[in-house]
Amino acid sequence: MAETHAPAPERLSWTLRTYVRLAWTWCRALAQYPASLLLLTGMVVLASAAEMGAVAVVFGHAGTLVGFTVWEGLLVYALAATAFGCADLLMGSVERLGQHIRTGSFDAMLVRPVSPLVQLATDGFSPRRFGKVLPSLAVLAVSLTVCDIDWTPSRALMLPVLLVSSITLCCAVWVTASCTQFVATDAREAANSLTYGGQALTEYPLALYGRDIVRAVTFAIPLAFVSWQPALYLLGRSDPTGLSDALRWAAPAVAALSCVLATAAWRSGLRRYRSTGS
Image (cartoon, rainbow, N blue to C red; front, side, top):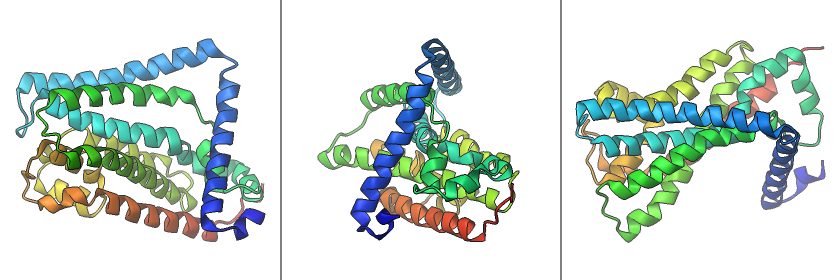
């Protein structure tokens, strides 16, 4: 493939354009059935609203939890839901890697002049997943307005950096978890326990789970940088579990490191992959 020998910026640009074209192809196909698409999207929106309602009910009955009010709790929820919702939209389809390996369709992806990861991520791309993102963005916008946040220039500039870092980190977690299916093709549920389970974990202030859990999701599986550390930074709070305040600035570096590890896991899986022969 000619793009293989092109400079890195050109390869990246070509990869992004290919991703958009493949995703748009699936969107056009689904748009042929607009009623079905609208109904499915509406159901996803309702499911997301139910999750948000559960968080509001918990905080509403408790008044405050580990020092977080209702709207501060919803800020944590919205940061997590936005990051994981965008990651699910962009990379969620990679969780079907084991299915493609079993059916032999992954072999076909390997011989096409397009990155197999791009093909896998865009396979079955559905705009109904926007139904997860839009409600969380709305809650995030309201909570950022209602919460008592000191909007200094640095904090305002840091907000989009934290959001992009959170989304990137979640995408990396999705890819890394899915790579386990190179070894065990039926490990999809195990991978989901890290992705969807990670979302459920990060939708609440992590101090609820105890100091050991917070350390595990900070230094082992860095899900704390999805919503917990960004929320502490925005609210100007010290970590009630005693971790350093400097960690809240580490989200971009953690996201970059996670991408490096995800890339290594993907390439390692490809090197060890053996065709199904089907």
